[in-house]
Image (cartoon, rainbow, N blue to C red; front, side):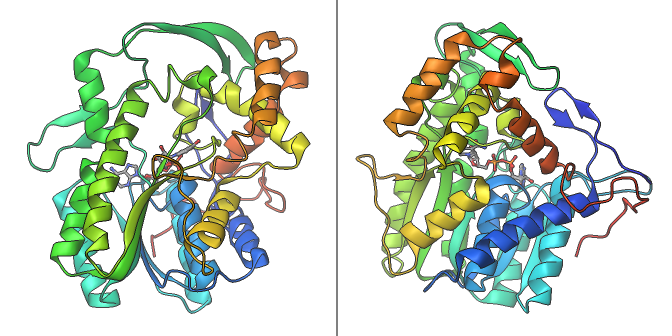
Length: 395
Ligand code: NAD
């Protein structure tokens, strides 16, 4: 089958197996080139391991410090004549490369919110690894079936309290327009906290602790975003931001749990805004990212997921370092994004963006390339005219 991108709004409904593998290899090569991470993680559980920041965490752990990794993700498998979602192919490519390098890599595809997947993960750790010394929590999900109540919670990306109007871009068509987003209802807000808040992270860590599956001194990290005021009504002060506050609340509880377990720690790392499947679904944010990329590339400080997480591991968590926390106890690898000169430049460009000057004033071209790369398209060295087999078994 010849697989071409089929973009529908903010998703691409196809993915390319060789292209996804090439993307994974780009990230592996970045980590190898950055050099070994000393005293790095040895046995790692990554929840949300197949794309974005979670995949970057898995690659940084495996190829930066030879870690054994258990990856949990929720991807649509391939079928005869139908491609899988990209995380499926990413995980196959990662696993092949890890095993070729002599590293343990095991995958569980299923709902991380469920009791069943948690149990399978605990069993796999007990049997294969004994204990883990790092747990990365990197889920981004539109819904959660609560394991105790059976209720289905759906997350929304909306402001809280009042409607919000600002510019947005249709990244596919390149049209800039004003968008007004109505505020979330009380139920939508509670549901978003149930999906993207910290309860599930706590459930994972309590289950691992009760199973005695956390090595002494084990660490756990979950990812968040803050960003500049132009995105606050839709992010930091919106439903997702309130869910992230709950993630921070959970992080403090987990930190206390891990401190008692041989002096470990849990914390939130605030990461940079990047093109991922999760962020492309948020109104306004893709326009911000397109401007940010332009400004940070010009400043020579642009990073992608793999650069971010390699830096998190190498300069905060391992290599004999300890995390530098902000006043709220968070690690800030969004520090380069939030530099005043970067944000001043974004603020300067933002009001003048129109459909006509979008290409010149922003890095919409870079945004589109990054977006297509998420699905395995537009990668150098891949022959997209060649026949490829979409149906690939998970390893
Ligand atoms: P992503 O969409 O690339 O990855 C999400 C991962 O979660 C995938 O591996 C997916 O398979 C998995 N997943 C989703 N639902 C699942 C379920 N029910 N069970 C098991 N696995 C499931 O997202 P991302 O952008 O890398 O986001 C990861 C984290 O990083 C999120 O907490 C997000 O808020 C945070 N973050 C993202 C950005 C950004 O700009 N993208 C910035 C800062 C922080």
